[in-house]
Amino acid sequence: MRIEPLPLAGLHLVVPEPIEDDRGFFARSFSREAFEANGLDSAFSEWSISYNRRKGTLRGLHMQAPPHTETKLVQCVRGAIFDVAVDLRRASPTFGQWHAEELSAENRRAFYIPQGFAHGFQTLSDDCELIYHISEPYRAGLAVGVRWDDPDIAVAWPEAEQRIMSTRDAALPSLREAV
Image (cartoon, rainbow, N blue to C red; front, side):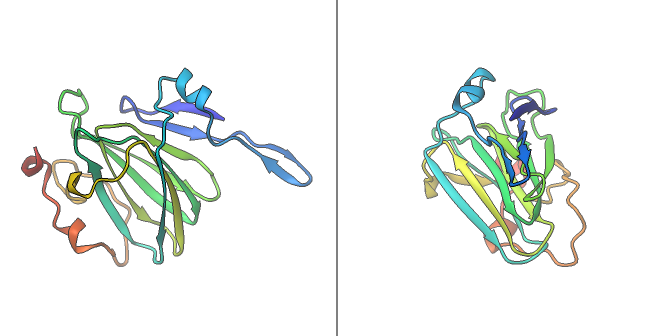
């Protein structure tokens, strides 16, 4: 497994390195030792599954507010998604900037998203399933986020014949309103 830093400080891509033979392959997708050696949080207190029936489903941009901000390790185990992280760390030189990765069952990559980033994704195929490893227990009262289509953030979401999203996500505040 390789851990590759991404353009926004703190974001990383976890890339499995399969050992293959005629039976198939074996690859590590997580190593506490490797995460800690790269200065990454390795204590995940919750694991969650997100199943999405239809292509064009958009979830986000979500995070949990202080004092229980969360680190996420996200992997798509069925289908494909456009996965986005937005830097909402006010003191960061990349505040308000975003980075996206395509995660799929085929590429088996995982997106490491540290505390202070909002997260969201759009499905690129039907029947997508994601696994989240999350560092903090979910606290409904601290669930916050910013609008997926905020022009100040300007995420270049993939075109979608139909976008499917929750009423809550459609009503999230803009970055200016949230700050």
